[in-house]
Length: 414
Ligand code: HEM
Ligand code: HEM
Image (cartoon, rainbow, N blue to C red):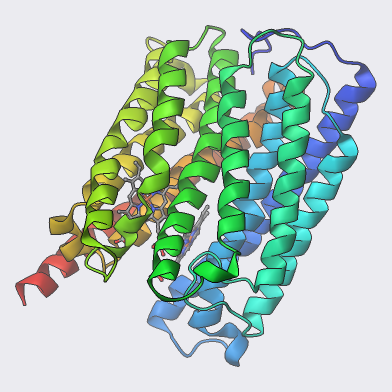
């Protein structure tokens, strides 16, 4: 990986550098372990479609394992991986050290304690039931909220120490996403919204903001840092990046009700969610165009630069997955797709094909960039991993999507 950068040169001591590297590595290792675990559970779930009785006892039933898989990917893998990378990006792009190494370690412990306790609770049958992606019992969600608050404080403190006048684009996305997630995590716990139709509205709000205002802005922030660094050229348009940030913030928070079309939620709320889902094309196309135009004329570099390949695949995952989401939000198509595997294909294309590819690029490339650029063994392993991930993700998403279109159309015809 090239070491040239369009951002400001870091003014940090070697000791700060080492501390940042150890925090980054610890987050990366924890995230990798969670990904291995969650993927293992995902494979078991998939196996159970064909062999539902496989695995003894209540603790291996599909109903318990499914939320374990989704929560482990969301809060064990993706959250920990993105926060680890966010620390690195914030410190580096601000030309400073991490605000508090201690808080970063506390945050890592809290994230892991929450994810372990949540997994054990779900497997023992303690499940908040109809609250999708909020299945952990609420005291455990409070621990996760504490991890978020600690992280937000630390990231803001790091950017506040910057040696540059401007706040770099990546940090707008990272801090915006982290602060917004603290808000949704609080709303998700407040007891007076947890019954009746209010609960349905809050569920939609929480679910979509978890993916749209947590994973998405952090992953986009990574792209805005990594692309200029890898290509040794500035981002195509800084203004377009800022525009995409504000339109993302304007349109995303209100689209959650598209998860509950045709439900008893007010019709106007559902229609608003559909209109804003269409409006989401603005930041999605703006952001994707910005990334792809930054790569213009350099796509062939992917042959030699596996991190660039990860980013390219991630950008395409973001573009295709999000556009698929907009299409999916129309009432006429929800009627066909809602109760099929189409959404499962969309979930994997976005969470796996976009978010996981974004973080893997960084975990394989930083901060041991010197090692990875010189060792051909590392390069081949990374290239291999990239192709396996790409093929598995795109073929599984495509097959669930195709099957979903057929089965949805058949059930509508009946
Ligand atoms: C080999 C890897 C994986 C396999 C075999 C797998 C398998 C599965 C299966 C069988 C389901 C349940 C589908 C259903 O109920 O019909 C599921 C759901 C889900 N998985 Fe995975 N998974 C994998 C990796 C991942 C990764 C890496 C992520 C995120 C980073 C992820 C996120 C999700 C989400 C969000 C859902 C819920 C989908 C929805 O409700 O629409 N999965 N997965
Ligand atoms: C403009 C962007 C997007 C739009 C308009 C959109 C739209 C949608 C819609 C309409 C559904 C619900 C489908 C149904 O219940 O039948 C959905 C589900 C989902 N989306 Fe998106 N999506 C977008 C981007 C993303 C991104 C970037 C991610 C991940 C980072 C994501 C992750 C998910 C997940 C995990 C679900 C499954 C929720 C569940 O289990 O019910 N989406 N999306």
